[in-house]
Length: 161
Ligand SMILES: [Zn+2]
Ligand SMILES: [Zn+2]
Image 1 (cartoon, rainbow, N blue to C red):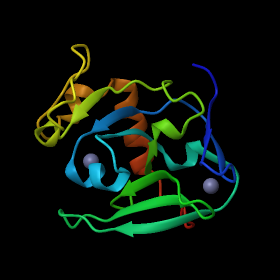
Image 2 (image 1 turned 45 degrees about the horizontal axis):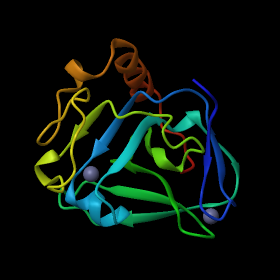
Image 3 (image 1 turned 180 degrees about the vertical axis):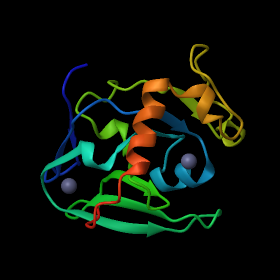
């Protein structure tokens, strides 16, 4: 895999992922559609300590959710581009995969919440799709699940993001 570097629209924020993600969700839920103003969002799930912020300042925003689960979105403080988010204060980030310099570098591993998919979006045959969500044990690779377990076992870093 080539270097996974990315940044915001104004160029102030630059980041690098220290490894590939554990899993890539393409989410078609109505919250994501509204927040990104598009048909879906592509989220690369990675441990927070594998995101290396190289420049710029990140500003968190807490988003309202239907579920009541916290959803914090992290944006460039200068231009407001969303770079990643987290749900539930766990040691993971959902990196907006199209903020990578190579926007096609990370292919979705699964399409989720397709019950609210826009009717004219056609999903590819070779990517699994789920009305709501999937069973993590059956979709994530053993390596990804091991990384997830290892991250959950670690105490959270004090500073956020
Ligand atoms: Zn910016
Ligand atoms: Zn969503």
